[in-house]
Image (cartoon, rainbow, N blue to C red; front, top):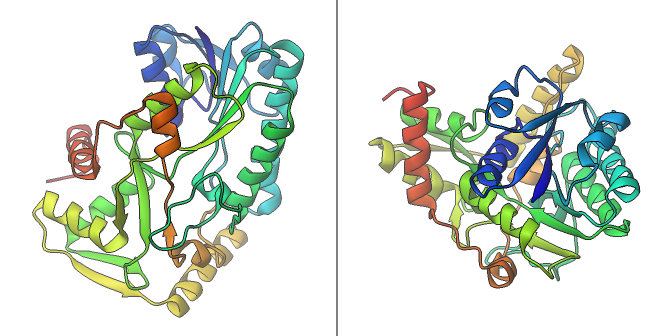
Length: 326
């Protein structure tokens, strides 16, 4: 099958391309930097240079394809307008090109649990729950989802939660480093519930979402069914690394000050950031959990890594890559 991937040099996109190549698919990647994607080209991926605002490049990338994975997104921005320009308007450009040049190709829109919003304790989100995004990023991803739903394309939406695994430099690597130090701050009392997914398992779910017949017009939560609290996550990483971790609770009042300060500094410097005062809503929500039952029953997806196995594989990759010391 001919498949295009946007965001192919990113964390999720690179694992998706690994999976598609292993499955024998013919892959095209829309990339901003061919130099960064040289390794993909050497493996037989056709590269199209451009970004989500280069309409000619997008048209070239989707022409003649039977499947398009839109995985590119902006996760840090200077303000809400920048989030919407990248995530909503970028998605609109992909949809427009597909409607004109590949109207029968399936669009797999890689969204986020943030687009749906937080969950109540003990009640993972399903497609039946009302959507309530609470951050700039979440609202921009939700707006992108609405464009996809309103399109004339055969579409499927995937909503990953926290993704971890090899090549993740920005999020869980920092957690591993903090745990190695013996200290780990957590927001609130550490009872927030999380759904998670190991990146190669997510990639397999996306492959199935793209190739399973008869599942158009669905939105799936693409996570392992296991739920973990933030405290338990830190302790399990500590056990894996042989560390007795001291957990440091951060109250909401202090978190708002810290996050607000980080956002103000980023604004003064003109830098993109995910850390700003509104992020407290995210960190202090009861849970960020999704129910993958529908995905598993309709596509046959079974994640191969529970949390302990996935964390162990991630740690080994970090050590081998030299990103983490023993």
